[in-house]
Length: 253
Length: 240
Image 1 (spheres, rainbow over the protein chains, first blue to last red):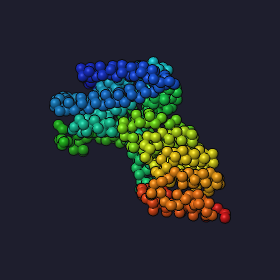
Image 2: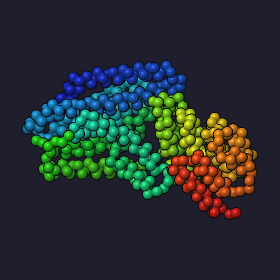
Image 3: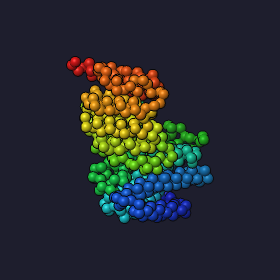
Image 4: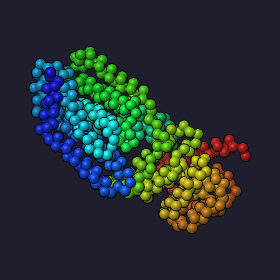
């Protein structure tokens, strides 16, 4: 099955590129930081450990996966290996979605790996919910990184666009709340800015509602909340996948 | 940067359908999700100024202002008849204090304290905020005098506490020495004791702030003018 070959290739490249070691290093660093926090916190030690390490590991996972996907795809394009693949008798959709599936599996692996140390400080159901959410979030991140790496010709621009989209999605709710504030003069410009923010929010995933550290601190989210968070990520990942596929289909030859 | 591309028309129709479907699903899902609502009870405890300094990574002025924008987002729904009335004012004070500690030259926290949070109809909360303004004024009187002057007016006209207003006025006279402090502020006690209503006092004060150069920011001037207009409308509605 061609898709399975692409998944295997993605995992093989990640192993050879030392991604596993980087993930282990992050986990070890997280555990060490947790031990350090235990020494300096005078209250809510376990909560402080879980919250800080979870936030740090989440960001690390996003950055590692984005950098890996972008560099891997750009290398493949620049070394003209992609052209060789396009010449093979394989549908383009299979090629693109196969690559994406490989990166998604890698993201899920990272999510599982990064959730393990959190079980030291948080209850298991909460860790499982956090892990599932991070897995879906990383699927979205992989789709975004693949889309930008295929569409943009430079590593830096692709990396910047991927991380910029992620940052905007994490902050859009706050930006909406600020833009709707009543203290600012009520003018046409302000109403337009507020409407623009609402419009942009419709085109972005609500990443501030997923993989929340507070789940680890105050208990797992309710099922509808978790389901909405996971669905939001998967829907947006699907949108990015289809958009990327459109671009990939147009690629010559 | 350019690359060879096939024409859009060469793409299979099912791909366009999939793109439109995915886009519609995303927009529909986001529109269906309830709008994010920040509850006043959600205002978290303020981080200590040392933590804010650490998080600022050297950008204290920028972080202080970002923190103010974050703080403003609470109770911004403006669905309640008196905005900010439901906020936990003790937490709010901790936030304002930490932000001011982060960037002591910023006037933003005291502006918000005097012009927004202290103007609540809840007397207990207003007094908490006035106390904060007084404490912070004493740290840097020559820079922070406008906020205590406004606090004196609020004490007189909103709280009907002439003794408190006179105390603030006396502190203004005693502690301000900078040449740019206007005469009426240096003689605040006489200003307070004059028989004038809140609107007249507010007009004189706003005019004084503008001519003394204490208000330079156009947005702030507009905000103050809007407040003055609201005050005019409120007093016009009230029976004399």
